[in-house]
Image (tube, protein in one colour):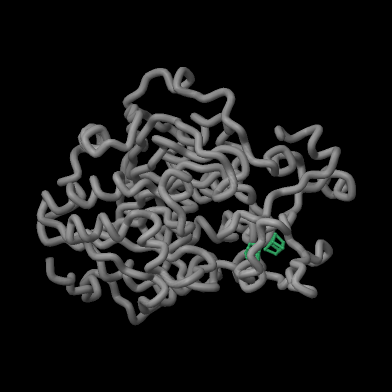
Length: 400
Ligand code: SF4
Ligand code: SF4
């Protein structure tokens, strides 16, 4: 298949900073979240399940027309094999790619992983996307090397990949995982990848508290305007996600036009009270995500996993901040380096937003007085050499 001409979409004026859409994208009085069981990543099962999900939403043809350029945005956080459950499974990406092609659309697959090590090709190869692109003729694009456009939301400026302006439809393909900083990562958090390069760590520095970082995530989610969300929850991640947790079979695929509604349902299914999650709370303040959520499943409670392991930081984040401040010296969770696993690659040093890490005579050290507990180092370490350490009192409160 020839390369797709990525001209700028005619309906977007790129000369002026783009403002965030202040309302929900759903355009519906009640957001609908479709859930279907899916027990494996066999192509046939995933294909039939996604077909069913899209039919609940009126069919993919409602969103994709012949000739449309369609950006598929998977989670490609790390150059790791799909069975580690860090990235969106390539079979999910392949099925959506083929469905877009069946409608005469041109699929483009892109992401910008945090702290890239060894070039983007390594990520495409490891996550199975190179194979998918070869098999289907879909185009892989690197947000890292794409041009950017300036936009603003709530007084903050962002430089997002220009690919967003060069496509007609955006389909978000998040992976359901826990997240040490934000507790949960799904549709809203997945769109953070449209922010290329080191900007990602900079925003951690300027918004270290999860509730402030949620504002950044919601800004980017609103600015990027995804049309459709399909979540891979066949196998998710529990514990210390998004990259150091444990793969956990969940057995569902979910879809919605409303990413906040989708995250609300998905986080509920794995045991969170969605109202305590920073992104959902910020979304509600912005009237994003409809408060009345309907789904094709009548008994959500029966689908709920009651033994899903939540991240180490979980209780510390839902305890009122003044209380945490009082007990700070006794209750803490912080990154810890496993010297034996560390390859001294310095990826964490380059990506620490406050420069709290350094190599000292071949020993990697963290200055805990400087550390803002963003856990970026743990998230991006290619050797999984940074785990989370809890104080004895934190261990009493947090599941271990
Ligand atoms: S902790 Fe991980 S990212 Fe940091 S230097 Fe060691 S291997 Fe590299
Ligand atoms: S040491 Fe790790 S957790 Fe601490 S600020 Fe740096 S990247 Fe964030």
